[in-house]
Length: 616
Image 1 (cartoon, rainbow, N blue to C red):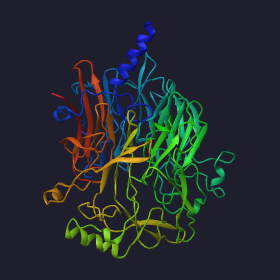
Image 2: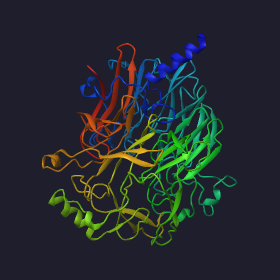
Image 3: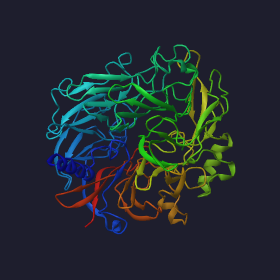
Image 4: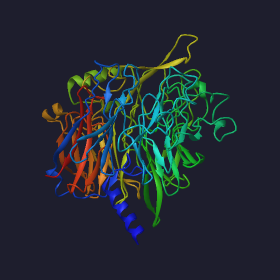
């Protein structure tokens, strides 16, 4: 009886805290807490704010910063990571700092952005550890009570993740920006890798012993001779192939002992004549035995990717009711705007997936795959094509700017290969949706996904004879080769960003609303247009969906059943991060938390604030 009471207490504590980046190991981003609910969410006020002191706006360092962390709360302590890869422990009711660990990354080395989306927590009931990967390619094990590295783990508390996967490429990028997966006494991690050139550091996924740091297993994301999938690479094009990595967050089915990988494109991203074939396990959802690293099943969402449409989001472990039976499933949202839904144990699609014929490539040497997978349900949550008469009319200046880009370009539907003529293609390279992924309400079996509609504007340009890659993508226009104007107003008519609620049982939308606005356009009388957005949502038993993400420095709460906005507050800068929530037994309050860092790829306003809200 005493053991049962202890287990029941643990379940209650876990429901009140936030032990995983996605709320639970399966990435549902759902909380059973309902102190904050539809009736009182309008009274939410700022409880406390913590500033990291870390802002890089492109003037003081070679890279800009992106404050993308989602904190954990475990055993009464909050743990967050900072853009410069520090780990900070706070008192969750007040924001008082308890300790800080600085891995000392080299801030003069160029990468994409200064990013760390979070860390992971492990305990065996006696010891507690924080597992943290850095952009420098090291994995640390820290004592959760003190922040000191565990001397038994690797060398002095860390291991060099580059060893064994990047030895041939000492000057090429390799690092960790997302939290690893914890399975029993294993820590499982992927990494970001440089992907512009054909060969580079490997994207292999590996598991290490949490107590010692010793390698437990390796899964070759590009199969080697004799391994399943190697025949999807022509000749020896698999050899030393870069990309095909997991830079985002993986998910874990603890009961089945399965870890789910959202894999990215092989390198190079756009011109792939040197890697003809379907290219497994590029752009695949892969289920591995978490204890051994053996493949259980996989599904490739894009064959021979030449659009940088990698899988950026954590697979969400969900439930679906079909033919009167509740099925454990995996929902994978993609940059393309598709939602793939699979039986969790077998990988069989819940709704049929068709192979859609797509155009061939006109670039010499390239062999685009003739078909691409398309789920019959749910419908796409992001724009996949545009007609010329859909050009923006929000301002005369925006229309004129966009017309000038369109004059020499071709508008094409999704999966049209980029050619030597300028091509405008939806979605753009950031999606669709991105790493924020989807949240899932197990009560109604509804998936909530935020998305944006910003096209890419590219053409393939021939390089000088003898170049490593004969053709390279060249952006056209301004502002990072995206189809928008200097104010970052997308060139098509709005809406430009959405929040969509998807009924997974039926494969249909419950509701869909524009997400975000441009203040200056609203003042002109333009209805809220939606905006580009990065970061995801949180759904609660209080009937609420919380989301920041938008490029308008707002944090919002919506009725999860109707999409009606119930609360909104301004942030110091846009909150390009996933929110979380927890309940404190000390104060009796439920807190809602989001990081507001701005900057990133969409604006020039920066901040370093962790914002924590509660009822008065």
